[in-house]
Amino acid sequence: MRFATWNINGLRARIDFLLHWLRDRQPDVVGIQEIKLTDEQFPHDVLADAGYRAVVCGQKAWNGVAILSREPADLLQCGLPGGDEHGARLVTAAIGGITYTTIYCPNGKSVAHEDFPRKLRWLDDLRHHLSQSDRSVPMLIGGDFNICPAPIDSWNEPALAGHIFHTPEERDRFRALLDLGLIDVFRHCKPDAQEFSWWDYRAGAFHKRQGLRIDLLLATPALLARVRSVEIDRDYRKKKDGLTPSDHAPVIVDID
Image (cartoon, rainbow, N blue to C red; front, side, top):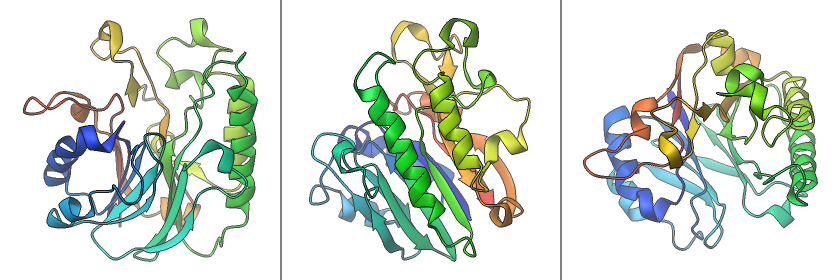
């Protein structure tokens, strides 16, 4: 099965781009973030025509997450318990014997902003929620974590260390997720690769390789043993047929 995660940065604006990618890459399951639509506004019919069902945890004009799948999916959780103040940022479904959660972690804005401690609390709530999960079922968590897990995941760690996405507090929370027994699939498979999944639209950041790896897939050990390959689909950070991409690239993992 092919799983993916992608911050689509507005599904209404990016639906044709998403359909292009679905036709080209043929994923089985995709967690998408920042859909910026309510459940009622979600384009179920358009995606059904492309061969995908969807479970949705939406929100008007902001946030919102969904899981697209070829097979039927059983919705297990909509919203992070205790995280209502941050909006619709988590959805979990059971698909093909795998529990897949997609998340959209709060950005935090800056270390001086009041949203930063809220982001840390959200990550603490996420860890608590995941710690209650049934570990006998293979589990994958994909999403926009808004954290560079390590210096290699930033284009300029010396200048950005201590700033948002690069703080010890955020990285401590990320390590706490790994302490649950989860593994960062990309970093496990490519320990020395410096690749990014997000680039600012401004100042030619994409072409200058000034990016961050903040879109991640975490797997339980049993599921990791089934991983065949993982890649950041950098090609889909480029325009396609005149369509404007998200500022994030999809991350794809193929699993036996």
